[in-house]
Length: 546
Ligand SMILES: *[C@@H]1O[C@H](CO)[C@@H](O)[C@H](O)[C@H]1NC(C)=O
Ligand SMILES: *[C@@H]1O[C@H](CO)[C@@H](O)[C@H](O)[C@H]1NC(C)=O
Ligand SMILES: *[C@@H]1O[C@H](CO)[C@@H](O)[C@H](O)[C@H]1NC(C)=O
Ligand SMILES: *[C@@H]1O[C@H](CO)[C@@H](O)[C@H](O)[C@H]1NC(C)=O
Ligand SMILES: *[C@@H]1O[C@H](CO)[C@@H](O)[C@H](O)[C@H]1NC(C)=O
Ligand SMILES: *[C@@H]1O[C@H](CO)[C@@H](O)[C@H](O)[C@H]1NC(C)=O
Ligand SMILES: *[C@@H]1O[C@H](CO)[C@@H](O)[C@H](O)[C@H]1NC(C)=O
Image 1 (cartoon, rainbow, N blue to C red):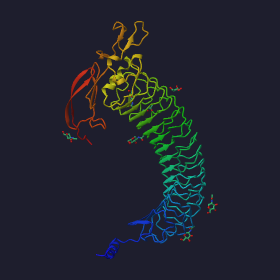
Image 2: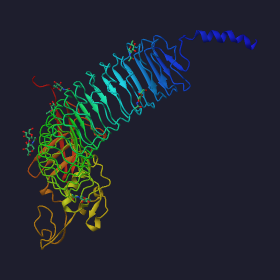
Image 3: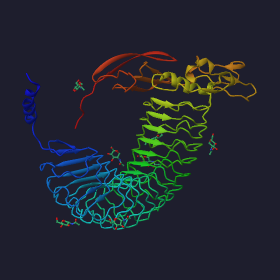
Image 4: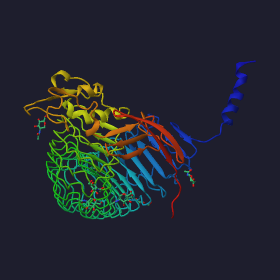
C-alpha cells in the first residue's frame, strides 16, 4: 500500500475528535479556556462563546483593549497570572455582565486609572504582586458588589481616604506587603461588613485612634510585621466581634491597660516579637474567650499574679524568650484548660511547688534553657496528662533535691523526650545525662555542722556522716506513683492511703499506649520504685438521666 493512502484515514481521525474550536495558543476544557503560550500576542478574538473561565499564564501581550472579551458574555472569571500586562484600555472588561472574579497577579503594572467603572457584578478582585504604586480615589466607585479585594504585595505608600467608601459589602481586604506608612483615619469607615483585614508587613509606625471604629463585624485583624511602637488606648474599642488579632513583630514597648477591653470575643492574640517589659494589671481582664496567647520574644522580667486569672479557656500560653526571673505561685492557677505552656529561654532560677497545681489538662510544658538547678518536690503531682516535658539547657544540680524529678522522669520515661538533659553539678556528675543516672547517685553531702544540704525529712546526721542516699529505701517521706509501662493506669499513694487513680481510656497518640475500652474489666500490674501493686479496674459507661 502506498504511504499516501493513510492520509484520508488520519484526517478522519482528526475530524472524529470531539471538535471544540479553541484559540491558537490555548487549551479548552469544557467551559474553561487556559492560555499559556508565551507567543500569544493579543487577547484571542475567537474565545468560545460558552466559556465561563479564562486563564492567561505567562503570556506576552501588554495591553487589554476596550471590551476585549465582549464576544464571550458568559465569562464569570478572568485571570492573568505572571503575564506581561501593563496597560488596560478604558472599559477593558466591558460587556461582561456576569463577571464575578477578576485577577491580575504578578504583572509589571505600575499605574491604574479608573478603568473598572462598569464592573457592577464583580465579587472578587485580585491585584496581588503588581508593583502598583498608587490607586485613584474613584477606582472602586462602581464595584458595589465586591466582597473580596486583594492588593497584597504592591508598592502602595498611601491610600486616598475615600478609596473604599463604595465597598459596602466588602468582607475581605488584603493590603499586606505594601509600603504603607500611615492610614487615613476615615479609610475603613464605611466597611461595616468587613470580616478580615490584612495590613501585615507594611511600614506602619502608628495608628489613628479611630481608624478601625467602623469595623463592627471584623473577625480577624493582621497588623503583624510593621513598626508599631504604641497603640492608642481606644484603637480596638469598637471591634466587638474580633476573634483573632495579630500584632507580632512590631515594636510595642507598652500597652494601655484597657486596649483589649472591648474584645470579649477574642480567641487568639499574638504579641510575639515586641518590646514589652511589663504587662499592665487587668490587660486580659475582659478577654475571657482567649484560647491562644503568645508573648514570646519580648523583654518581660516577671508576670504578676492576676495577669491570666480570667483566661479560663486558655489552652496555649507562650512566654518563651523573655527575661523572666521568677513567677508568682498563683500566676497560672485559673488556667484549668491549659494544654501547652512554653516557658523556655527565660532566666528562671526556681519555681514554686504549686505553680502548675490546677493545670490538670497540661500536656506540654517547656522549661528548657533557663537557670533551673532543681524542681520542688510534687511540682507535677496534679499534671496527670503531662507527656511532653522539655528540660534541656538548665544547669541541673544532680543531688538528692532532684530525686522527685528523677523518679518522675523514670515513671513516665516513655512519654518524655529529654535526651539532652545534662547535670551541671556536682562536679563528679557534670555532663552526665540525668535520666540515665542511677537513683543512688543523687546524693547530698550530710554536714554535721549544718552547713551543707540535707535530704528532706531526714534528721541531721541520721546516716552518721559523709553521704546520704536520697531515696532508696526511704520512701516514707514521698509519694509512690505506680504505673504500667505504657502509662495507661497510674495510681498514686502516700503512706496513709492511695490518693488518686488516672486511667487513660483512649489510646494516646504517638505513645503506643493501648488505652482501655468502655464496659471492660482489666487487671494491671503496676510498678514503682516503692514496689508493685495489682489493680483491677472496671469501667461501665452508660447514658445518665437527661
Ligand atoms: C461603561 O459601559 C458603557 C456601555 O457599556 C460604555 O459606553 C462606557 O464607556 C463604559 N464606561 C467606562 C468608564 O468604561
Ligand atoms: C497613570 O496613567 C495615566 C494615564 O495613562 C496618567 O495620566 C497618569 O499620570 C499616570 N500616573 C502615574 C503615577 O504614572
Ligand atoms: C469557653 O469555651 C467554651 C467551649 O468552647 C465556650 O462555650 C465558652 O463560651 C467559652 N467561654 C468564654 C468566656 O468565651
Ligand atoms: C478564677 O476563676 C474562678 C472561676 O472561673 C473565678 O471565680 C475567680 O474569680 C478567678 N480568679 C481570679 C483571681 O480572677
Ligand atoms: C485551684 O487550686 C486552688 C487550691 O488548690 C483551689 O482552691 C481552686 O479552686 C482551684 N481553682 C480552679 C479554678 O480550679
Ligand atoms: C538573663 O540571662 C541572660 C543570660 O544568662 C543575661 O544576659 C541577662 O542579663 C539576664 N536577664 C535578667 C533580667 O536577669
Ligand atoms: C455499657 O453497658 C451498659 C449496661 O451495662 C449499657 O447501657 C451501655 O450502653 C454500655 N456502654 C457502652 C459504651 O457500650
